[in-house]
Image 1 (cartoon, rainbow, N blue to C red):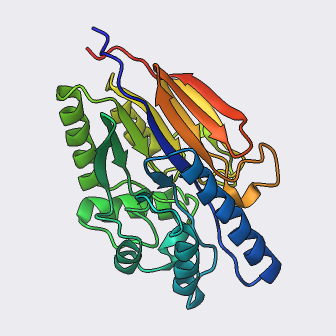
Image 2: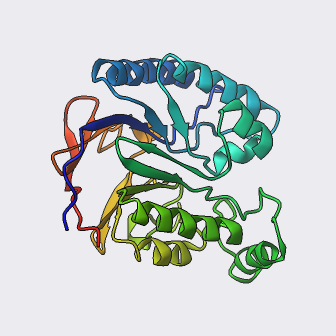
Length: 282
């Protein structure tokens, strides 16, 4: 049966800021552009903001200072901010990164407006993470050494895959629509060879596509942005803040879910996407 309509939900969205203060002019324009994003989110009445990863660009000693600086810029937004860990973010050690951004766990879920949001840690298995178990060590060896996959991408680990299945089982029993959040794209057609995608994207999408209550997957990483529809699920790659002056000129935006539609609006009022959010939950 078709579930009843739910109250409208509106949240802000932004990805791939890549704060780079070594270029003073770029740092100033970043601050100004982020101020406009914060103003947009406040003026449009968003309930929270999703930041999809890659807040910073630099590595080494400067990474933590850069993270604190861009966190300060975003802190002008008075509401909750959901941070999804990106590959560049791990230039700051994971434990410190999660603490500084108040990320409750490397991967987690939360509910807003009757929708279950599932946050994946795409660098769970990577050259920047210590494998949790033998299966993850073998996975790292396979992708890094045998396939020679892009070193700046990563995979969802075995325990996280089990957790994802459990979360989706629970959400289905509770008749919750689901939006999955992952910094790295999950489908080959939503990225390119340079940017890459989640190493074990096939394993993750195989799980996601089994569930009739999954409505959308939001990712970043591929700066031009992309879209694909698979088994009735919208796979949305949000354009990067860093390429805000290039088409589609999308520094940030708002997402509104109401009346069975999912609409992504740009800062200038353009509708980036207007999609059907209704789906039969069996």
